[in-house]
Length: 191
Image (cartoon, rainbow, N blue to C red; front, side, top):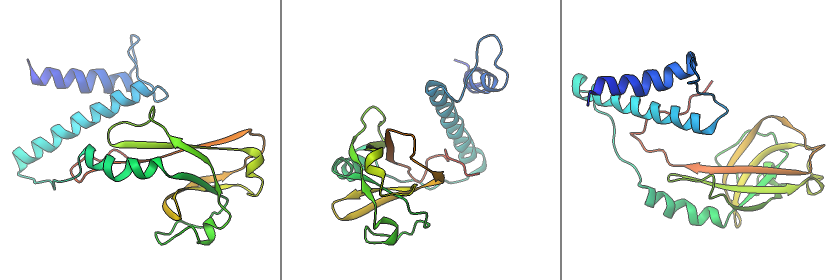
């Protein structure tokens, strides 16, 4: 096998050209999940290649270490399976010291919550929550979501822009946690 040709075909032709040139029926679009996964896998392969070359040719050492999928499951799955998603109208910035008693969660509503196995995969675990619009009446808007387990606030996520719930029958939210080890390549980029 010719490694150079394989890299050229897998990364440049099958992904880069399919994104930017999209000729002859070969194209990738961001709206299609299978295309997104193909691009993400290509980015992982390319990133591993760059890291390998940097280590071998430039003697650059990257930090190593992390959790296995089994450790991730032990720490998260059992906790999230018994957790619920809460929704609040607060637009107060998130604080690491927040609890369910914090002003941002004083009037939070509990959503019907359950695991989402069809969205989850190794190193990624999701739960789904839903609440009818009639039950949202105490809130003025949707400002944030949280994950609650018993009387503890485990995680929180704000809504980027004001979200009103008028005109909807049901609000659904999916929240998840993802394993990211030290040596993993950067996959998410801020604006």
